[in-house]
Structure formats: C-alpha cells, structure tokens
Length: 93
Image (cartoon, rainbow, N blue to C red; front, side, top):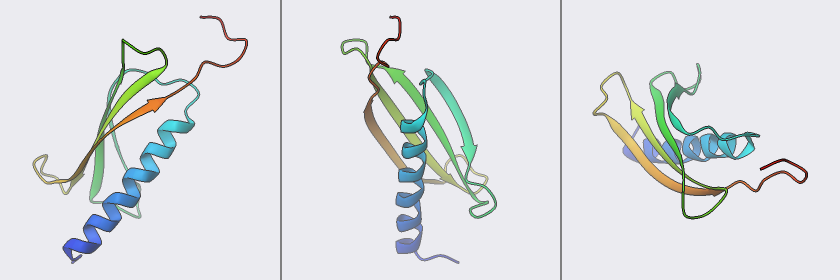
C-alpha cells in the first residue's frame, strides 16, 4: 500500500504527464473525456474538461481530476490550468 506522500507524488507526476499530452495535441477539442494511465497505474484514472476561454482567443481552461480506485468519490487530486494554443501560421481562421 502506498503512503500518502507517495500517492501525492505520483498524482503530481501523472497530472504533469497528462497536461503535457494535452499541450502536444495539434487541435484542442472542447468537451469532457476520461481515461487511465495504463498498466503501470491500473487504479488511477482521470476525468478532464477542456473549454475555450471566450474572452481571449486561443486560450483554454483545462480541468483535470484524478481518481483512485473504482469509487468516483475517491479523488486524488484536482487541477485547473490555462493553456494557450496559438494558431498555426498560415492556418485559416
């Protein structure tokens, strides 16, 4: 069984991993999705919400919620981040 410190450290690393994956996406799609972190972390999954910030072009709000175990109430960590995705040069509006 993992100690609370180990769980928090792992959660932080997984959040950074997921945010990096989102940053690397060519196109961000608004909406809610979920997934897991594979066989290495079979008991940790995530739910995420991506929304455009309507007042600032190309800015997105990302909400990421890590869940440990099968119970949706078993939250490990919640993070909200702003992500700027500039348009590609030469892309049509």
